[in-house]
Length: 192
Image (tube, rainbow, N blue to C red; front, side):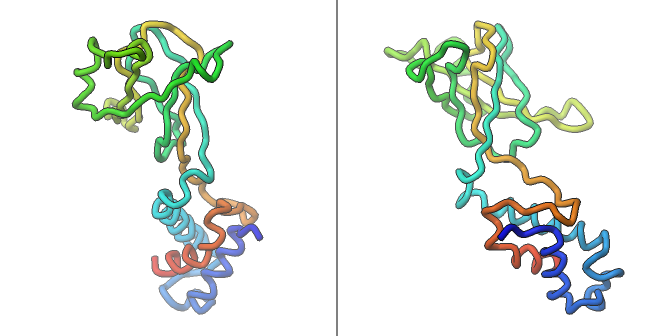
């Protein structure tokens, strides 16, 4: 059965021995403060469990390449990048697609003008990730080397693990893979 914010509040109430007397929770488990604690615990559990459950809820995103552009913004809800593939465009078939391999940021200079050699040299594309601190809110970007030489719509496809959304309404449900751990969320919120 799906667990909601209301279920988590009930669980928190149990661990606080109700009435909010323990821990100084004014207003008990129904308070705004308790919702903040539950969301903190929920986000922490999402952070703890990705490796065991990362393929359960992968999302996809697309990047359209532009000639001469190296850096592209990543989806704002991206938590961890799982897989990157190139060759996705109108009229493409499965044999046109290929994996884009990760490289370290410091290694990117090795691949600008000298992609790997061999039969697939024309299909060699690598990516690195970087965080820009030029703005008040840092933006995460993905860079491709060698720099794409053509403009193609939805050419790169990303598979990634998204950030969980905040529970704000009493009927908001937690992600299905965390349902077995809902009591852990309650305990962590009570400890907070």
